[in-house]
Length: 220
Ligand SMILES: C[S@@+](CC[C@H](N)C(=O)[O-])C[C@H]1O[C@@H](n2cnc3c(N)ncnc32)[C@H](O)[C@@H]1O
Image (cartoon, rainbow, N blue to C red; front, side):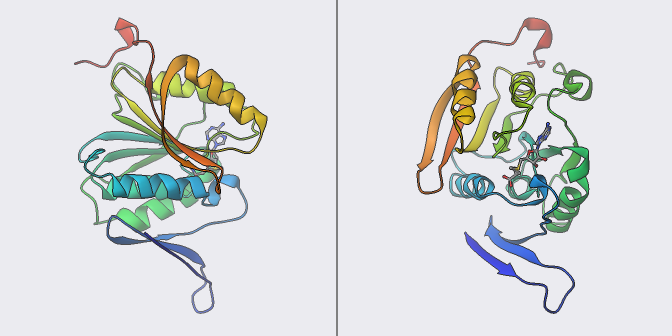
């Protein structure tokens, strides 16, 4: 993995450069919103995916990313062969779509789909459980001091089916985040894949503790 910052001296646009999946990726950030900045958890998750391609083979897998922000995880996941639905709040989608299109066009088998997912907000209508079956849920730095932690938990619970694997990079900042992890463990088995104390980031793999009810299951 490589990382570099290119200031806007010659062009009108500054961007962060990364190399994942053997390809150069350019990410445009904006300081207007949290979601338009690339957070270190996303880099940790991308590094994991890129260096564990055999264990976590994403080829043709159905993946959803929640709180996708600038889109790095969506981009890397798509370049590794997955069918990706990339989601965030409405205000974030413009920059997200720009980065995703710019970095995946003509480079991946399944062009990613960028769409709104506001946690807890009509999730069953937008992503019906009976038809939207995801092999993986990707989440990087979605837990911090925001007022939607309950809705976030409901969203994980809704999207995660019996065979879904959640890959979640978590940046620890405050006690509230520890409480979220404790509550999360009541619903999901949690396995620690990375612990990076200097970054205060852990990477988790999670699966459902209890099976989905019959009427909510994806067809076998
Ligand atoms: C700290 S940023 C992380 C962005 C990206 N995953 C990364 O690691 O670079 C948190 C993300 O969660 C999104 N978010 C916050 N509240 C949300 C909500 N209620 N529903 C959906 N997304 C939300 C933000 O828009 C933002 O993209």
